[in-house]
Length: 96
Image (cartoon, rainbow, N blue to C red; front, side, top):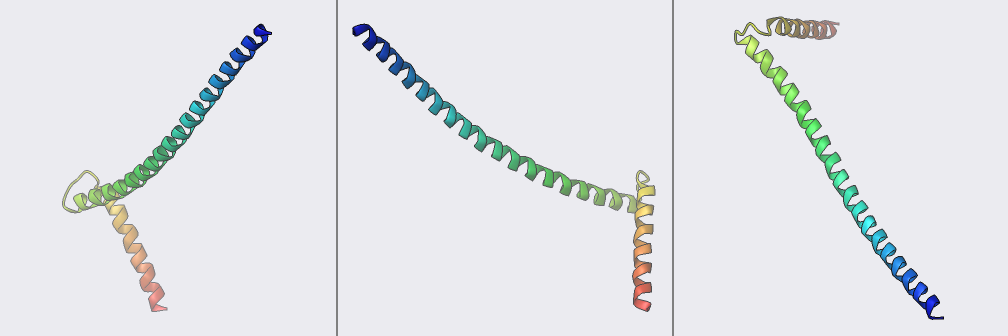
């Protein structure tokens, strides 16, 4: 009978260790999920910041060209022509 008791004790110990391991893995999983959410939020924030910086860069590029820089002269002329067409369209709409 003592052999069966020893086997039961060994099984109980192994089961207890498995439960401890499961609890540890579940906690680790929750921590990783939280970290993943934080990383996703950080990525979204940085993407928005990148978009804003791109727009700011384009504005600075146009302003630089208007101040006499030769680098982006063609882009600025196209942008100005586009704005003139929009203004002409608005004037035509107001005239009707």
